Every structure is written in C-alpha cells, then in structure tokens.
Length: 331
Image (cartoon, rainbow, N blue to C red):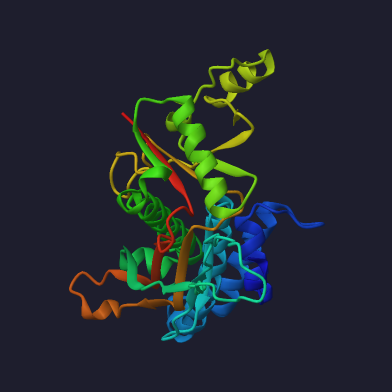
C-alpha cells in the first residue's frame, strides 16, 4: 500500500493517518504540516478573496491528500482480507481467480496416452464503481473569517468515505453467504465439530495449512472449544471478549461501526468468516482522482459556502470459485 504514496504531502498525510510519528516530528506536528500546506496553497495567510483566487490549488491539494488518507485508514482496519486498487478514470482492472481443481491421476497402460484432458479454467472479474459524494456547508461569515477549516473538512470527508467503504466491505462479504457452497457454510447454534469441518474443507479446497476466522467480538464470543482452555486463554478471553484461538486457528475481531447517520450497528454480529491466511477475498477499487469543488455562494440567497467531495468507489467478493472462504451464521 505504501507504493501508492508519492508526493511529500501524501507521505505526510499517510503517516498522520497511520499515526506514525517521524524523527523530530510528533503526530500533532504531522497534522499541522498538512494544515500549513493547505494554508500555503491559499496564499500563506487567510483572506476570503485570496482563497477565491487560489481555491483550485487548495482543492487540488485536498484531492491529492484524500486518497492517501483513505488508504491508510482502511488498510489499518481491513488489510487482512481486503485488497485496494487505484485505477485511472475509465480503466477496468480484472482480478484473476486461479483454478484450484485437483485433477485425478489415472493408471495408464504402457505405450498408451489415451487419457481424458482436463482444461485449466482460471476466471476473472472486474469491479464496477459508482460515484459517491459528500457535501459540507457553512455560513458566509464563518468562511470570510477563516473559520472554515479546510484540513478538517478533508479529514471529515475522508472519515465519512472510509466509513462508507467499511460498510461496503461488510455488506459485500455477508451478502455472499447465499452463493457459498453448502460444505463451506453452516447455520445454527455453535458446534465445534461443524466449525472444524468447515475449516478442513476450506484448507483442502485452497491447498493451505492455515486459515483465519474473522468476526465481531460478539460473533467470536460464540466460539468455544469443548477441549477446555488454559488459565492464560481464559485471561485473554476476559480481556478481549473472545478466545484468541480455536483448535490452532486464529480468531481476529473486525472493527464495529454504526451505519452512517444512525445508531444501528452495521457489522453483522451473527456471522463469522473463515478464509485462508492472507487471502484477499474482497477487492475494493477507487477509479479516477478524488474531486473537490466549491459552489459560488453568491448564487445562493443565503450565500452559504458549500464544499463537495466526490470519489468513484466499488467492491466485490471472490465468489467465482466456491471454497475461497466459508461462513458460519449463528442463530
């Protein structure tokens, strides 16, 4: 993901969002440096007319910062199972899904090669994007006094769009339940034997020795091994809200969040996801540059200042080949 970071201001924003202090610079210094860069693009000091003269420099800088900040924020939360791509406007990147079929080895008479052929059938898919936007506004007086903090607006837009992408990732994964083959999923009260069977099928289908289990803290709390746990494991469960392992398989908690504009928990609390370690089952695509623009407040009767943020975003889960991941839905 760091290969996406190119310019100095993008590096500053990436480190600030990643909460990575630099030598001689605190996190506060990093955030202030981003603010100073935006002020400098405005002419070095706030003046409403100076801003209007330089606003597209400011917006270009904000559009440069936003993608990097989003990548840092989302990577910290979802990097274990989501892959993020940036495409030029109009480009369509295809994701390849390898054929994992294990073909039968047959007995052949000497001097005979009459064996039925098996075609290697890889598949691919593309992720469609849609334009998503956020708009902020403030009163003309606040804008003219310089109380409209453009760095903070950029942070809020980044936080809001990152929250949307987080919701999109969760919806994409849980929405794939119906397309998963029966041997890779289960519904009902937790049963250790059922989960073990799903794990073994996922390992066999993908040719791996290790899988991981993801879910919210509430969902992971359903998992208990009938073999019993050590005192250390019980202490961990008391600290985390769930046991850290199930028969050698790591349990990893997903970040929980409200659906935007509500007090409803968005990430499902009844499902767990079982997938090969380091398998990126969700593909998230950002198409084109971020767009930042501003209305002409003189065209409004109330003369309010509006700032618009736009980004083309899409996501899809690998479902072309059954067995890339499994799910257990508790009831």
